[in-house]
Length: 173
Image (cartoon, rainbow, N blue to C red):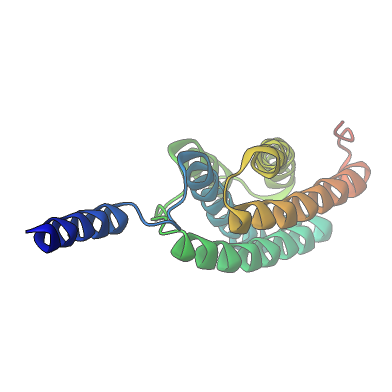
């Protein structure tokens, strides 16, 4: 009889362990991975649009560089998400989709200005979110990715500041 109780207890532990895998991401890590993935999807779309709609060679080049960087970051993010058993969204969020649509209606200098302003605001928000993940993230893989994201996003913000005068726009703070 005692063996049966031990067997039942062992099976119960196995069921509990299977239901809550040790590598599953906590809500904060999962939310951040989802958010960054959507930012990456948005930046990739912006880069494709800039190739056809931008007037400034600096915007075209920077948008292409951003898209490439965000694709690289997203490739790594997808690996981390798979390790942590996080299901990623297929599309940018509603606000990002509206920004993509709005930007897609513009050409020339109007596109350049809107692309710039959207990128400044978006990168500042993404930087804050990545810094929060670095401080409060639970899983080492997510925190390591957040550290990489902080560096990449800070570089993008610096690059935006560099081209602002060439576009006749104020340098963001």
